[in-house]
Image (cartoon, rainbow, N blue to C red; front, side):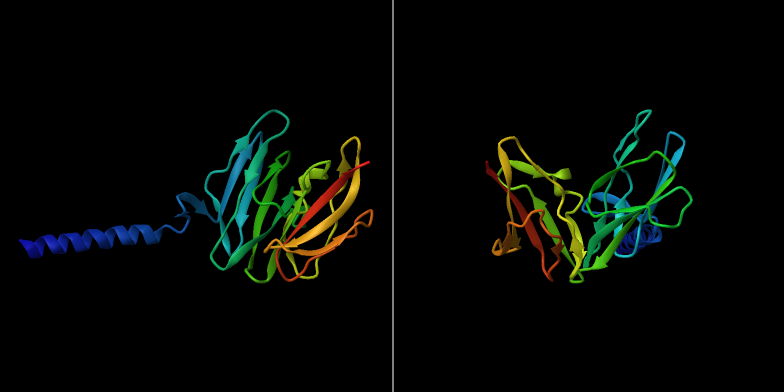
Length: 210
């Protein structure tokens, strides 16, 4: 009887293992079901979302659906050893990239057929750049979110447009390393493009009272 019970248990484990391995469409990472590709239909338009090698996308995406703007929140999860690089956005039937987004997660408005491709790169090949508006007195257009992201060493990244608050003026930008050490500072205006170093970096935009 004991041998029979052991055999039944072994068979059950084997069946469960086979079922888990046979599903290549989706899997679960950190309690979030993920997949490699999906499509969403919104007001007669189709959004295809694809993850290239090195990562995945969630099975379900947040959607804000109305008669004019159909907002979809895109998210991508890098595999171990990879980092998120860009969203490549294609519109219509074109196979040419319409625009790219460095922010992740991000939102896109679906007003035509679109394809969003999550692109990943091996860790160590790209580095993270973060823009911050500092303690106050102004802000960067878009909060710097459109410039924040992953870049290759040597990439030239324009500084977002600066928006001082009334009574304030642009002061300088300060670059910090991931260890919170100042790398360099510049009061040149308009600020020149940032050259990406071979490490993560944070750019703080400072304003001063007039």
